[in-house]
Image (cartoon, rainbow, N blue to C red; front, top):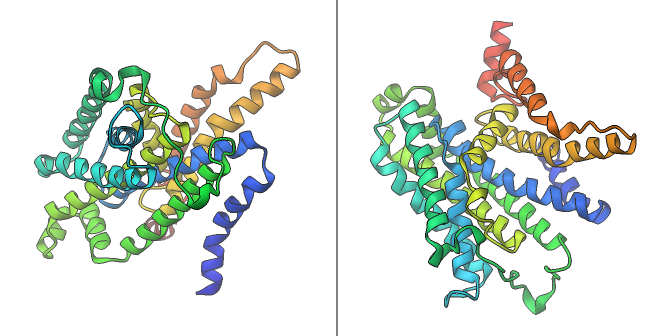
Length: 332
C-alpha cells in the first residue's frame, strides 16, 4: 500500500513545492488550474460516475461565487467572513443541484442535457438582471481576504495563500471522491451509468442515486466558485459563467478520461495549460522573432483538431477507467 500511495501522491507534493520555486505569474496560473480541477471533478461525478449529461455546471460554479460574494462584501449586512461563506456556498450549490434534479429524474440523454443547458442560461441572465443583489455585469467586489489566526498570511500581496487554499481543497475533494468510488453510493452511480434498468432490478433506487449525483457535483462546483471568487477579489460577472465554460469543463473530461479522478485533473491541466500558459508563451516567442503572426488566433483550430483526433483514436481519454482498459485489452 505504501508504494502505491507514494506513486499517487507525488504530483500533489510537486504542486505543493511549485510556489516556492516558480515565478509568481506561473504560480497564479497554476492556482487557477487547481480551482478548475475541483470544478471538473464536480462534473465528473455527474457525467463520469453517474452517466448523466450535464451542460450547466457553470451555473453552479456561479451560484457558489455569488453566494460567497453576497455573504462577505460590505454592500450587504451579512459579512460572515470567507470560511462560513465557503461552506454555505458549497451547501447552497448542492441544494440548487438537488432542486434542479428533482423534477428531471425521468429525463435522460439529450432531454436532460437541454434542461441543464436551459438552467445555466437562466442563472446567467438572473445574475445579469438582478442588479440590486448581484450588481449586474459589474460583479460584487471587493471580497475580503480569508481570516487566519493572527493574520498569519498576506493574502493581498502574495498569491501563495490562495494557491494553497485551492490545492488543499483539491486534495480534500480527491480524498472524498476516492472514498465515494468504493462506497455503496459510488457503486450505485456506476451501476446506473452502465445499465439503469439492470441496476433498478438489483434493488438500486435510481432516482435517489441520480439526485445525490447532481447534488454532490453541484456542491463541488459551488466550492470551486467560492474559491475562484475570493482569489479574484470579485465574483467575476455573468460572462464568467456561460455555456461556453460548461463545454470547456466537459472537454477536460473528454480529453483526460471519463469516470476517474486522474482523468479529470490531467485533462484540466492539459487544456488550461495549453490555453493559459503555452499559447501566450508561443505568442511571445513569435513576437520576439519579429513575425506578425499570432498563434492565439489559431489556437482554437489546433484545439479542435486535437479533440477530433482524440475522439477518433482514443475516445476513452488519456486515462481510461479500469473497465475500459480491460475492454481495450480484450479487443486487442
